[in-house]
Structure formats: structure tokens, C-alpha cells
Length: 269
Image (cartoon, rainbow, N blue to C red; front, side, top):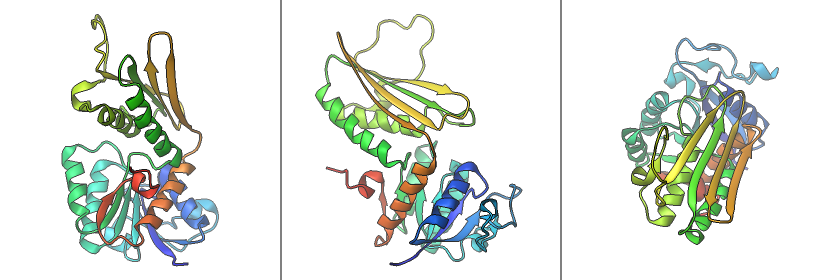
């Protein structure tokens, strides 16, 4: 079994620590690097000290030092940080697993360009269950293409900075594509006051933020006399970490290219 040398971005954050623990527990992975932005807590300390089992890997703010021994970088941070890491990894042939959300079109284009130099899995959600849910939504949208109003409802913790979530937007895109629509034209992201009757071709979004909700997503197909709800609820971020490791394994034999979790899970087609 070939061991994967994996670095973690945002090493001091909630998701970063979960990723570090997952790598430490995996039989086929080794923590080879850890990076965080300058001034962040934990810079200069052992990346796995919080586990009580030091890894001998120091959290670095300098990418050259932090990624010196890495074949892969798992990045669940913020767009500005991820784009900086992206440029470095593309230049040095380090494969990337990107779970960061909130990119604008320019950011997405930069990821696509970098994938010509290194292999990347880019997904708004690395949960295996969420991606299976996406496939179910595609099938449901095709079967319920007329007579059903579609609403996407998502809930996350109070610390999340982007809305709707990247997962909710991806769900909307999957549904819109299945219906032959463009989400930029049919998505409705705010309702207030007298909004007139609902446009039957629209896809609505509702966002909830509060407490420590890890991530809940429900898509409602509301018809006359019945409604169908397809939901996924996360109780732990560990599922995202396991999906990210699965993505690293998928990239093992890929020199370049842009992939998503559908590719990793063989859900395309």
C-alpha cells in the first residue's frame, strides 16, 4: 500500500483539526505538512499537539516550508487563501482537494486553469451521503419537472460566512441542469413584502444560521396534494474528512485534471 503524504491548510481551524485527525488515523496516509495564515494561533507548534500525539509536523505560515514534503494538500479554508495555495501547488505539482466554498467566477476559472498543471478534486461538499443525495435530486427533478415547486432550505452554524451554502447552490445547479434551466436566471434568493405569485419555473432558496448546526439541507418538491422532501443532515464534520481522503486516493494516478466527488464516487452517467 502506497502511503499518501498529505498536508492540511487551515491547520488550526475546526475543519483543519478534523482533517489532521483523520489523516493520523488512516493506514495509508501520513501528515506531511500543515499551513495556516500568518498570525494564526498555533503557528510554530506541532500540528497534532491537540490530539496528545505529536506528529512531528510544525504548522507553518510559509508555503514552501509547510508543503515541502507533501504530495497532496487538502484545503477547506476561504477563497483568498485557497487561491494563494492553488498557485503554489500548480507550480510545484502538488495535488489538491478543495472543499472551500464561496468562489466567484474568476476563482473558479483559476481552479480550472491550475488543473492543467496538477490534479484537483473541487467540490462544495465532500460527504459521500450528500453526493448520493445530489444524484437523487437529479433523478427527482427529471421525474417532477412539471407541477412541482422547488425550494432548497439549508441550515448551518452561526460562524459560516457565505450564504446560501456551496452545497445548497450545487443542489440548485444539479436540479436546474436536470430541468434544462440556468440557475442564474431561475434562482430566487430573497423574498420580502409583496412578491407576487410564485413563478413556477423558479428555484427558491432559504438560509438558516444558528448555534452549532453542522449542515442540514432539504429540497422540497411541492405539488398540489402532495410534497416530496429529500434531505441530508450532517451530525459531524468527520464525514467531510473521510470524503477528502477518498478524493486523495482517487487522485493517486491522475497527473492533471479537474474532478469532483461524482468522479470520485463514480456517480457520473
